Length: 220
Length: 272
Image 1 (cartoon, chains in turn orange, purple):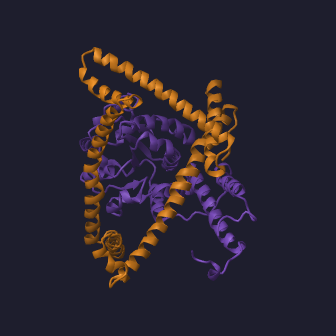
Image 2 (tube, chains in turn yellow, purple):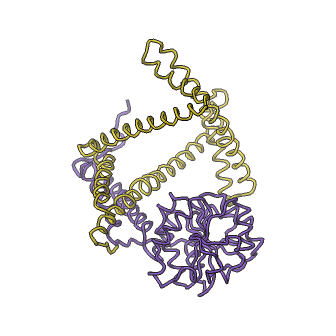
Image 3 (tube, one colour):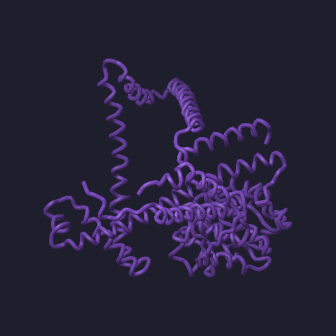
C-alpha cells in the first residue's frame, strides 16, 4: 500500500464512521457532511455513467444498430414532463410499469404462492422436519390465513361467532411468529449483519491495514 | 413506559451500545459460547484425519462469500494442515479461482507449518459444466491436466496419490446455494460410496444427507464462530462475541428499566 492509498483508506474510514453514526446519534454535523458528500459523489458518477452510455450508444448506432433508437426515444419522452406536452411522459412510465409487472407477476405466482403451497403440503405429508413441527407449521398456515379473511360472511364466525376459538389460536400464533421475526431482525439483521459485521469488515479491517502500514500488528 | 431520561439519555445508551459492540472486535473478551453438535461433528471429522490423507476443499462460493468468510476458511485449512493431510483445492464457480489465489496468500501454509505447494497442497483450475464437470473430475483427476498456476499435473507429486474421488478421505464444501450440495450428492457417492463430506455454510443445505454422506456442518455465522472458538480465532468469532455482548446489554437494560422505572397501576391508565 502506498501513501495515496493510505490517505484514501483513512478518509474512507472516517466517512464510513460518520455515516454509520446515524442509527446511534441521529442527524449530526459529521453525518450530514458524509451524507452530502455521498449524494454529490453518486450524482457525479451517474452523470459520468450516462455520458459513457451515450458514447457507447452513438458508437453502436453508427455501426448500424438502429434498433437502439427505439428505447432511447421512449426514454427521451420522460423529459417531456418538463415541457407543455406533459402527457407524453406517461408512455415510458406505462411501458416500464407494464414490463415490470409482467416480469414479476409470473414469477410471483410460481415462487410466492404455488411453491409455498406445495412446500407446506409436502412437508406436512412427509413430516419434515419432525411430526410435531410439521403439524404445527401446517395448521399455523391454515389458521393464520383464515384469520386474515376479509369477507364478512366467512370471517364473522372466526372473529366473533362460533369459531372464535380458532381466531384466538390464530392470534396467538401470529404473536409468536411476529415475536420470532422481531428477534430474528434484531439479532441477525440488526446486530449480526447491521452492526457487528460492519464494525468487523469496515472498521477493524481498515484499522488493521492502516496500522500494518506503520508496521504495527494487533495481537488479536 | 418509554425512554426514562432521568436514568439514562438516548445518546448515553447509544454510546454504551457502540462501546460494547467494539470491545470484542479489538480486545480478546472470551464470552462463553456453547459448541453445537454439528460443529463438534465438523471439528471431529477433521481431527480424525491421519497424516497423508487426501482432502478436497471444494470452493463453490463467490467473491462476496470469500470476502466475508475468509478467516473461517483459514481456520479450516490450518486445522487440516495441522493434521498433515494433503489438500486439493478445487474451484467450482467462475470467481472461485481468484478467491483461491487470494486464499493461498492469506492462509500462507508455508509459514504456518512448512507446507510445500505441489507436495502438500495444490490448487486446481475451474472447469465449467456443473454436473458433467463434477462427474468427470470425480472419475479421473487428470481431466484437469494443469493446476491453477498452469503447472502440468505430472510435475506435482501430490497428484500421484489422487486419481479419483475414491482416494479422498474427506470433502469440505462451502456452497453459495443449495444446488451445489445436490450436485455433489448426485455425482460422487456413485464413485465413492464411503464419501464423507463436511459442510461449511448451513446445516439446512445438507439435512437430507446428514449422517449418510455428511458428517459435520457449520450452521451459519454462529457455527463458524463456534468452530473458530475451537480452533483459530477469526472475524466470525469477533462478530458473534460482539453481538452477544450487545444483546446481553439490551436484555439487561430491559430488565433494569422494568425495575428502575416508576410503575403505574394498570387501572390508572384511562382509555380514550
